[in-house]
Length: 47
Image (cartoon, rainbow, N blue to C red; front, side, top):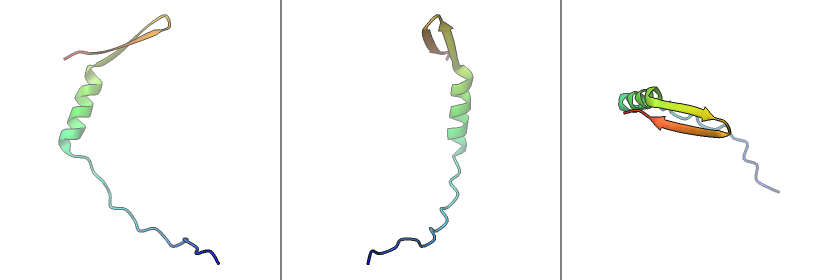
């Protein structure tokens, strides 16, 4: 008979990002600008 794998999975620990990661993503998203011209899409990052 086939072995059944229906045991409950253990709860994974909550993964929290570092403050540096959140800061990096926020600053990146603020600097990102997407421009559409016809069928073309341009992504520019203003530093």
